[in-house]
Length: 188
Image (tube, rainbow, N blue to C red; front, top):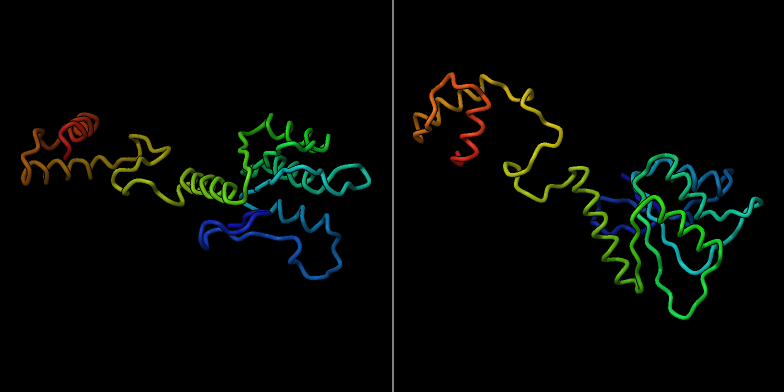
């Protein structure tokens, strides 16, 4: 799993990619940073006061990265620096509006606040992807599971054991939907 371009904030789960750490090579800077965005799982955009360097088309690397992350359907987490008494570059304002049209973004004032909001967003990402569970295994829902995924023979075996050992109120051979309903209500 790769995170681009912010530092590792959730232990060793995420690996940050810093453009500045790449060795000298024959690739253009643009090829490298856009390839990294294409390969990442999570794109983290930090938007601030300045728009930054503009290429021959007048577009910054940050905006190009955001656009590639969008085109590649990457999870995009955008954090916008809150400013007091400063005027944000017009193109940076436009980039922020572009992001706000497609996703929920968070603002931050200090590095400590940014670290906390990035951490919370990454934990949320891990939970949504079911890389981590917030509940014990037997209390968590299996997303996308249907009744057809349940083995009727296993349910019937459960009824036999629950009847013999715990006085389950149904007999073996009871239809599966009824067993599941009663098992949930009776907390078996």
